[in-house]
Amino acid sequence: MVVPKTTAKEEVMRLMADKDKLEKSISDYGDILSANDNVGMSGPLIDAEGYPRNDIDVYQVRQARQQILCLQNDHKKLMSEIEKLLHQVHKEAADEENSAGMSSKAAAISLESPVEETISPLNVIVNVNLVSPGSPAEDAGLRIGDGIIQFGSINSKNFENNLYQIGALVNNMENQRIALKVKRTEQILDMILIPKKWSGRGLLGCNIVLPETIER
Image (cartoon, rainbow, N blue to C red; front, side, top):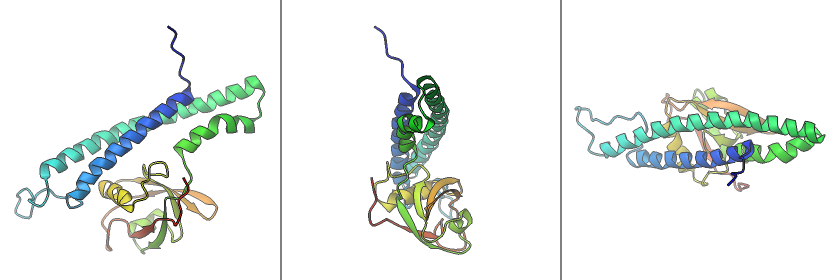
């Protein structure tokens, strides 16, 4: 029996499904950390006297943190594979354009658009309505009125229309880089946000709200 050869685009789609599963698992373990006093990835597991905290399940937190670290490493490798395959997808598009005499515009629509739409949906998931001076959010470049399209691994394809989902990610990524894709008027901007303790409240220093309507 001859097994049909998988194209680069089909392989990207398969890896994107794996990526969604990984991100769901990371989010689930993040929920465990949030349920344990929002301890996150770096919150203390012992009290002031050096004993294990009795207000959280220390064993459960340790297990969740270990799983998140492993899954984040897997996620990084997977995204690297997807990036490599994307280059191949574009090459296949160019080759088909040359062989079939297609215009570059037609090739982009027929071959590239489905992949790009899956990987980088451009729908706003939350809006920024407050940015505190001197905050991590201001340092990242966020402004009032910005619409966030992608917040780390969260975008309109996997966002559950619940701010708690973003809060869990922020707690899990304290002092780590989170990639943002932001819509400002007609511009699409890439930013890096690092949640961390600062002189104000929270780890971001901004307030986000759900848009009245999120297009799917």
